[in-house]
Image 1 (tube, rainbow, N blue to C red):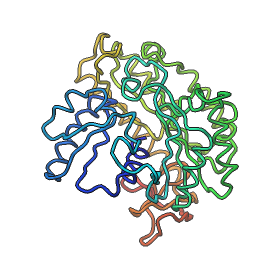
Image 2 (tube, rainbow, N blue to C red):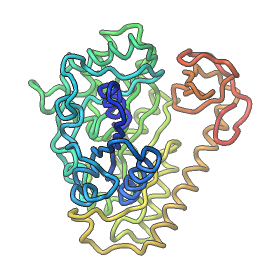
Image 3 (tube, rainbow, N blue to C red):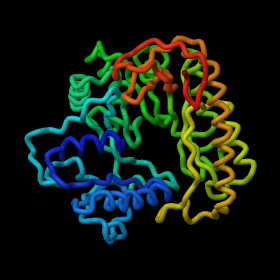
Image 4 (cartoon, rainbow, N blue to C red):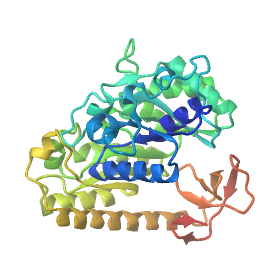
Length: 379
C-alpha cells in the first residue's frame, strides 16, 4: 500500500520544488519510531525544504507529529492522493513511474475491529475502486512497461463489499485477466483467508497468470489468541485452505504475518505459533513483536514482558528462516521464469528471489536454473 500510494504522490508532485513528503506508518510502535526517525533524517538531508507528513502516523498521532520541530505541515491520510490537498493541478491524473512490478491499491480502509490494530483509526472504513477504475490504472502501468501487477489493499479480500451488487475479489481478478490477455503475471498481496471467494480460489489453483504465492493475514497459530485478537478465522481454517490449495497447485508458496507476544500469550500459545510455520510450510514470514497501540482493546489486556516478546519473535524468525532455506534448497536445479528487477535480482512466480546474470534487462522474464542458495538468494 505504501509503495502504491507513495509512487502516486511522487508522480502527482513531480513539478514541486524543495518539497519532502514522509508517507508515514503507525501499524506498530516500531513503525511509529521509524516514522519519527525518517522525519529527522529527511530534515537533516534537506534542511531548506518544506517537509510535509501524511499517512497513518500523521492521522493517529497527529498532535505529536505536528509538534515536531522538523515538520512544516500535515496532510490528512484520506486526502493525500487528492491534488487539491497539495495545491497542484487537477487535470493531470497521476501515473506511477515505470516499474517492472506495478502495485495497484484497489481498496483502502478496514471495517473489522481486530483488538490489536489501529488501521481503521488511520484509514477509515473500507472503500473500493470500481472495476473500471482498476482497469484504468492497470492499463496505465502496462503502457509504462510493467510486466507484473500486484493487487494491494489494507484489507484486500474485502474489495467490492461497498460497491453495487457487492462483487468479490475473484470477479476483479477475472476482469483484469480478461481485459489484458497479454499481462504475464498477476500477484495478490496479503489476503484474509476466510474471505477468499470460490472464484478467487479457482484462479489461485488453476490460472497460470495468477502467481503461485499466497500471503495470509494469519497473525497467530493458537485459537484462543486468535479469538482474543478478534480475528475471524481459527487455525483449522488456515490449515484447510492451504491443504486444498496445495492439493491442486503443489508449487504454491505460502507467506503469513505472525505476531509474537500478544497479551495473555503463554508458552503453549507460543509453541502453536511456532508449529503453524511448519504445518503450513510458511516460507515468506513477516514476524511482528507485539506492541500495544493506544486506544485498542489489546492495550488494556495483561501484557507480556518485553524481553519475552523479543525472545519469542526471535524464535519465530529462526523457525521461519529454517523453513525458507529448506524451501530454497528444494528449488535448486529447477527451471524458474524470473522477472528481472533493476538491482541484478528478480522474482520467480513463487516469489523466490533469484540472482541474475550481469546485464539482464530490467523487465525481462528469463528462465533461470539456480545451482545454489547464496545469502538468502537462489543463484
